[in-house]
Length: 228
Image (cartoon, rainbow, N blue to C red; front, side, top):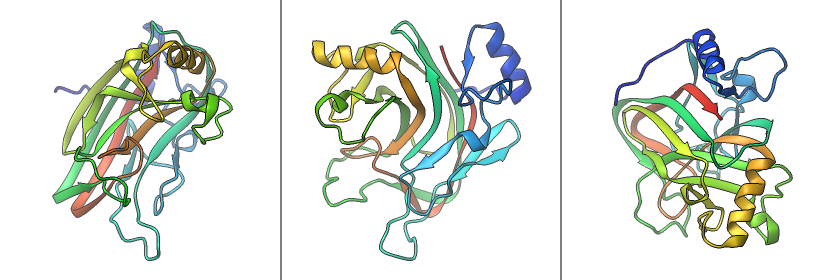
């Protein structure tokens, strides 16, 4: 898949002209959608708090498994805070690269209960304001993950677009947004009250339970991210 590299300045002009709202945690007047300080690496042992700036975007390196203690190093969520209200007619878009050295294996079976056979992927993530991370009661429909639109982790480039329609997103316990009327209402309410957006990394039974690498190195570089 061909990827067009563009600088942040050009990206800002291009997206503004096409009606995209750049995501920079709504930093007033900045327009720097890929500012590293507004992107957070969360719930990820052995990882820095933020990605590293690079010309045209930012990157992080997947960790090796050993953190030097009880924890297993892994990257799980990479997100940026927003305050926006969207509708199901919108889209989320990203352009990124995965570069490797050696022959890395992307490990995802990091927990005893992750017994499913499904390769490590990166996919889009949406989180509603006020989430307590329990997934219980109404909070079952506060976190959403793109289901069909995802990239299997390997060396290469990708340009992903996911429609903000309920059938394209899965809730924290595996219900698609069109599963029933309650799920659909929860998805629509999440879009109307967004607090964080970004990516999750995982495989097997879980979309966001972490990935690390062994047998080589791997880097994830984000070049473009937008939502409309």
